[in-house]
Length: 228
Ligand code: NI
Ligand code: MN
Image (cartoon, rainbow, N blue to C red; front, side, top):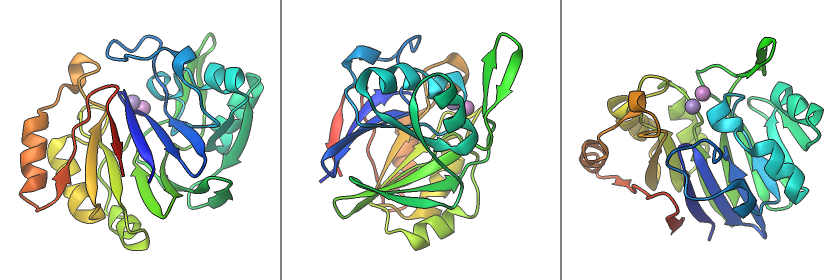
């Protein structure tokens, strides 16, 4: 059974399929993070988009661990330019890795890394469906609600869906509840809330509304783990 650990914001550690994956490790500069980049030991680093609260410590973690970054082509190429190993993919594409399968989904958002010369654009943002040990985990990345979530739920029997709920930059609580209806996952784990003032969210409200759909919402504390 894959084990999920919440690292804060959109960051998760997934242990399964004989490997350790980390998604969107934003630790340095994250006021709510409890781990430091040096605490992360991973074989693969999945990055949904280039914004600093997602790309975060991905490159230093990948380099320190000899890990492979899995990201959309433009972002993967950016990471290779910073000296990390990368496996570029793109929306709609899946690949069988030694630990299991990763498929990239759409995400309605932006993707750029602020640099000395302004924004360096890093292509389309994405979400991930990670399949390992017979389980399917969907990490939506940063996104607004979209109707194609129905298709993601139809094509994959989702055991867990990790959804942003913080509003302002992504879906808020009510749209995320609608996403749960579309995706029909076993459990839903909220992310991307409370890290900054503009993304404060009412997680009790979220839990109540998901439970009203007869679905399970699991609100993880930073550092907390769950088996999927
Ligand atoms: Ni973003
Ligand atoms: Mn974000």
